[in-house]
Image 1 (cartoon, one colour):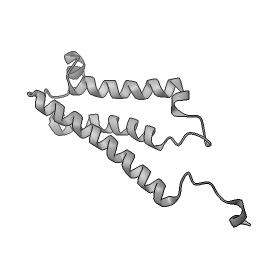
Image 2: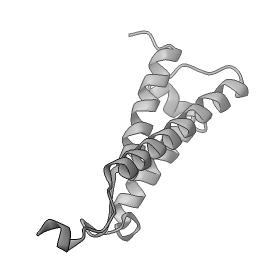
Image 3: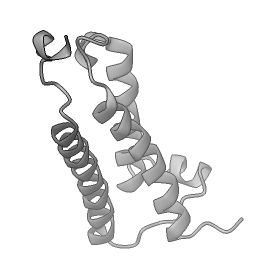
Image 4: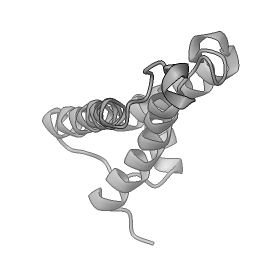
Length: 115
């Protein structure tokens, strides 16, 4: 295995996407509790985001060495990579809301039309 920029991006983006998808797909009430009501879930998702941020900005170089993440030479590249993650999250959120709007999720069902 030879670490390179592609493997860095795929590894970090997969962790970030799992956390983002968990947030976006969690519908909350009336199906289950709000995401903010579950302290463990909030802490786990926050830990994923902090972990990805720490790896991208190389806050702990020994962690990056342990994970075989290649060094990003310029701060601009790190910022661009993190911006990609944020755009991915916003895109995931936008697609979910658009699909919910098209599918009618969240609209109250008129009981008279069902009968």
